[in-house]
Image 1 (cartoon, helix red, strand yellow):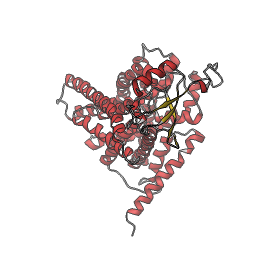
Image 2 (image 1 turned 60 degrees about the vertical axis):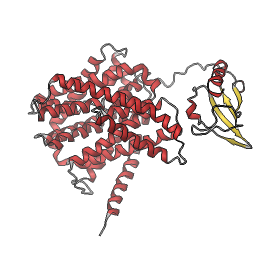
Image 3 (image 1 turned 180 degrees about the vertical axis):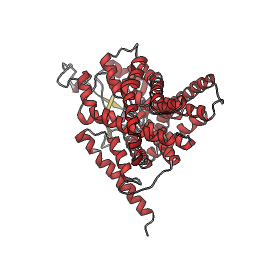
Image 4 (image 1 turned 120 degrees about the vertical axis):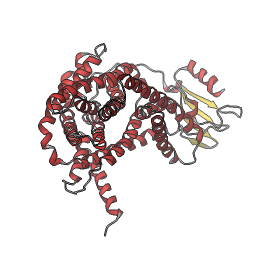
Amino acid sequence: MYGIELYLLIIAFLMLLSVISSKLSDKFGVPVLFIFLGLGMLAGSEGILGIHFDNAQIAQTVGTIALIYILFGGGMDTKWRLIKPVLKDGLILATVGVFLTAMFMAICVYYILDFTFLEALLVGAVVSSTDAAAVFAILRAKGIALKKGLSPLLELESGSNDPMAIFLTIAILQIILLPYSNTIVDWLLMFFMQFFIGLVVGIVFGLILPKILNKIHFSFYGLYPVFTIAWVMLVFAISQILDGNGFLAVYLAGIVANTKDFVYKKNLVGFHDGVSWVMQITVFLILGLLVFPSQLPGVALNGLIIALCLIFIARPAGVFISMIFSKFSFKEKAFISWVGLRGAVPIVLATYPYVEGLENASLIFNTVFFMVLFSILIQGTTLPRVARFLGVELDNQAKQEPKSSPLLYNTLKQLYIDKNSKVIGLSIAELELAPYFLILLIKRGDNYIRPTGSTIFEENDILLIQCDKSTQYKKVLKRVFA
């Protein structure tokens, strides 16, 4: 009786309910990802809607596509000037820290479950990456600001540790399925080649994107988001075809692109943030559908013990050992350890054994799913208290002395674009002006234009400029507007 409209109704209902339910995170501090997973479980075959879904291959494919856009959106929202001071610590955490966490987890799993060490190592690799999206959602909801360096470090780690976890998971799976196909040297070479190719592809395509956006001059704004969606696919596909790490490539492409000015930058960053949320909701709903809640009690006890090992042993060991020479204090490292929330990536990676037909695939998936639920709920809800207890929260009462600044009218300049100016036909974004050089208003004939990055300069334009550095103002005039 009903066709596609019934499926559209269910999808719309679940998406809207997910978005509306996110208000619970603001009010009660319940992690939003936990809500999305719960809704997926309620809609599943054992839930209210009774939607039967057990196709791990589809879940893995959707999860992979979702991760691509989640990582790119995270990269586009990452400010290079903030992560640059913590770049070394972040990369060590995202590589050495992830590897150590996987190893310590493997030891715990080996003695708790009746697994071989390789299977235990597989579980360790699956749960080795973090998801700080939930962390920042909770911190924002509670109005908590972390001390300088902590927020960008957690942001960098969460965005860059997924490629390492994915590489480890796939490598260990291949060792289990084809034990004599590669040596340790082969795996090390593959690791460095994947990350090197992903690094190069990400940087190159991240640098090219702003230049294309500034030059292409589409007639309609709506074509710019379409272009960037296709661009992300292109970056991932090319990196994978070249045997690189596509996840690292798209994340780096987002970071590098954000260091440059381009047309509609603010709009595109906001657009990809929205796409990232759509992908998060989609992947969590599907993963919630994939799990059968009746199977969770059977893994609850072992899952609880393993989750506690992850929270109190494996993650802290990975953090403290990898950051042994870091400038961060003991309390700050302890907070970084506690922020190791698990999210979409471990559950998506837990579908890999399913797809490959591993004997203990169902047990691995259910155990990982339970661990993620426990991690999000326990660590997520206690995060504000732990931040205050460890003293890593900024004191909102502390006020800095206001700095003296020149009067506004002393910093305003007027500039006329004559027929010989080399900026005619260029957009503001193409000029890559310094942050202190602001074009406030453009007078064009009898009209006043509020400039944006996509505004094209024309002959006889009169610009109102704000610049509080007179020497720099002259340099910019000579270099750009001469």
